[in-house]
Amino acid sequence: MSVNLIFYCYLVIFGSCVYNYKNNKMFYKVIFIVLLVFSFNFSYSQSDTINRKSDVGAKIGYWIVKFDNGKIKEEGTYIDGKKEGLWKSYYENGNKQNEIVYKKNRPNGYAKFYYENGNLSEEGLWKINKWVGEYKMYHQNGNLSYDWKYSEKGKRTGEQKYYHSNGKIMIEGKWNEGKEDGVIKQYDETGKLVSERTFVDGKQDPSSIKYYDTNNKTSEEDTVKAKPKEEKSKWPKGYQRKRLNGVLQEDGFYEKNKLKDGKKYYYDEDGNLEKTVIYKDFKISDIQYN
Image 1 (cartoon, rainbow, N blue to C red):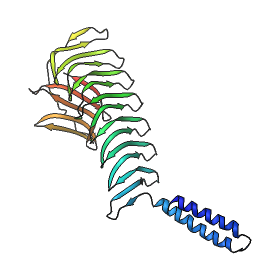
Image 2 (spheres, helix red, strand yellow; image 1 turned 180 degrees about the vertical axis):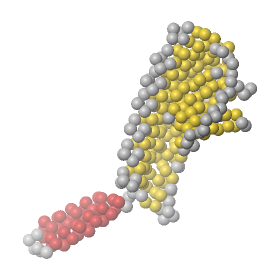
Image 3 (spheres, one colour; image 1 turned 60 degrees about the vertical axis):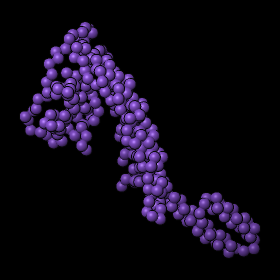
Image 4 (cartoon, one colour; image 1 turned 60 degrees about the horizontal axis):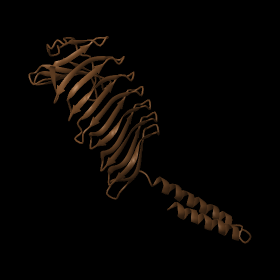
């Protein structure tokens, strides 16, 4: 029953009440019962507009899913059982967890993710499980962590920047379709230049490597390459190592099958270690080149 119809019925009843108040004292009792019936129908019609299913059992319309504590877990619209439009998810403390735009049950639009403390974690244009265009990730303190650009293929392209948690630039340079291409500069937490190296199509030119001391004087790098040594200590809980054809690719602490704190190793065509990417709390905290 629509709200307009209910409102119209109320007006008719009220008018009848005014007209008949002298002629029928029992009329008010009838009016009271009728109003109760209309109120019940109105409440029922309101609750019936969410969490609905079609005749074939597919979710349709607006849905609200809640935690056991009664707070909203997620909310959004279904069309024929598929998520459509803006969906919002929340942490149990009530803070927003993410905002994702869906098209036929797949992410397709601007997306935002949040830390549990309410600060923005990452944002960008998400198309079918890949980032496109400008993408930003933030430290938990709110400072920018990554400032990346993606191609339509979902590969990093153009100027890329990493930042220390204090807001100072950490790494900057250009990428082309997911590979370093050009001069890559690295800085310490005070903002001073630490090193420079040149890449062509993801391959590092050893002769281009320069280190800088605190006075920004350059020194040539020892280009001896070595593979990471294996530790012989007993592995603690959550620690893993991943190898490909016997060569160490990743090691560190994992959560939900994702590297949380540890390292990823990258090698050249000859099997020499080129760079080590260090992760802290699921994010890149440093890149060490050999």
